[in-house]
Image (cartoon, rainbow, N blue to C red; front, top):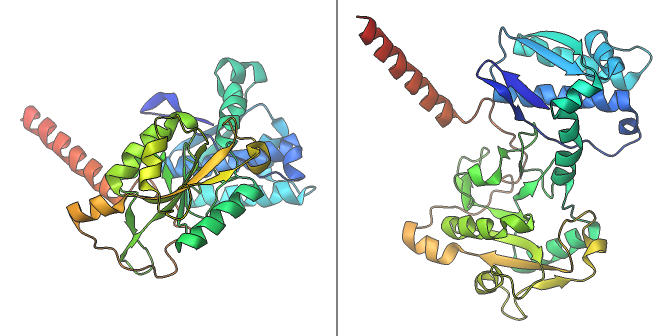
Length: 326
C-alpha cells in the first residue's frame, strides 16, 4: 500500500505479507484481504475520524465486495463485514475508486507489491532452523520473547518488529525501538529482560550489533557462517557457549531457511551483551512472569509519549501564532 494524506502527498509505503492458503490464490480474495489489512495499518498511523478514506485498486471485484459485501462468497463477506465494523469504529467515510493497472504501475504501487513484498517475506526460518534455535535457547535456559526482523507471515514469536507498518507488528523498524534489552510487561507492569530472535539481512548485521551492544541485548542471532566477516569476532566474544566453538552451525542452509537471501551455511550465536551494560546502568529487571512474550500489538497513532510530545509542540506553535497576532 502507498498511504497518502493531507500532510504527506508523496506517500508512505506500507508492506505486509499474506498467509499462504487456497483463498489467497484467487486475486479477488487476495486483494480483498490486502485492502482490509491496509486499512488496519492506516488507522494505526493516522487519526481517520471525519476523514474520507479513498481505496484505489484495479480489482473491481474486490472493490465491489468492500462496498456491499458478497453473499456468494463467505470469505469476501467475512472480510467485508470486518472492514465495515472497522470503518464504523474509526468514524470515517469510505470511497472506492477503480484505478487501471497501468496507472498503479506508473505510480510504483504495483511494482512495490512484488519487489518489496519479496524482501519482507525473507529470509524465512524453516522448520529445521527453528528447531535448532529452540534447542539452543532451552540449553541456555532462555525463553525467546520477540522476533526483531520479521513479518506477520514468518515471525518466530507472537511479538515481532517489522520493516514496515504491519498491523500486527509491535514496532515499525526494529531500530526505532528505544531499548532492546528490557521492556515493561503490560500484564505485571514490571521490567523484564528481553530475549531476541534476530535473523537480520546481511547488510544490517553490523548495525544490529552496534545497537545490541548499546542496549545490552540477550539474543539468538542467525548470520551467514563466515569466519572472515567483520561481525564474527564480536559475536564470538559475546557468545555464552563455553563448551563448544561458540556457535551452532546449520549446514545446507537452503534446506534450513527457505527463501533466505544469505548464501552458504548459517551460524546461530547465543549472545549476551548485558554484562558491561548492567554495571553501567544497574539491573532493575525482575524475573519473567510468563506473559511477557504475549502479543502486545502496536499503540495506535504512536506511543503515549509520542502523542504527548506532539500535543505539547502543537500547543507551543499555537501560542506563538497567537502572540504574533497580538
